[in-house]
Length: 188
Image 1: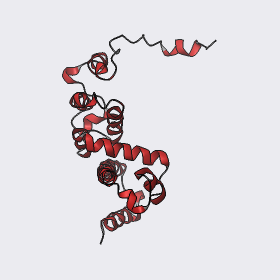
Image 2: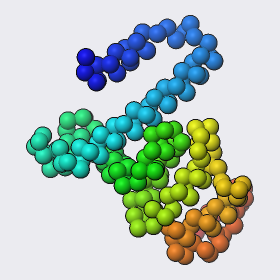
Image 3: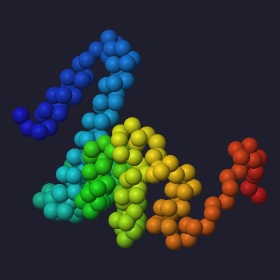
Image 4: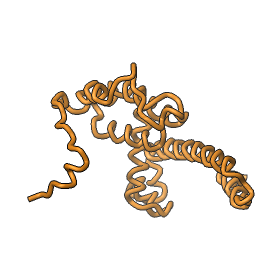
């Protein structure tokens, strides 16, 4: 039995389960476990993709790039293929972020955002990486909300991290208008 066969068998087992007989509590626990498995699976796919891309495996399949390989062989959209290749490249460069994702300390969405930040600011991200990972959280429960060191406010976090990414970040942001004021303003 190959690697993919065991996964397909597990999915077929899940597909045959009578969901109507499960309590909402059991379904909720299943959803949480499935999300955890999905995250682990996605992290492993990105790890393998990073090695494939670095070794230029796409050449063996007669493609000019990993994105092209994924689009044609995995029936993936160009934007999805670009996203995965980008994440794979960043995951190989920024191991702490990858490992935090792999071990459930950050969600897949958070890892994507962190890798995007790394891609956009490759010279500044290495210094910011430990701070950003601490802010995001260090347990799966904490990844559902921003956790700040020493209970910082969002403004304090913004002031601490903003300069790492934006040199002019020290300027205070204009105050947000109340929702009702925004609704009344019309562009002229």
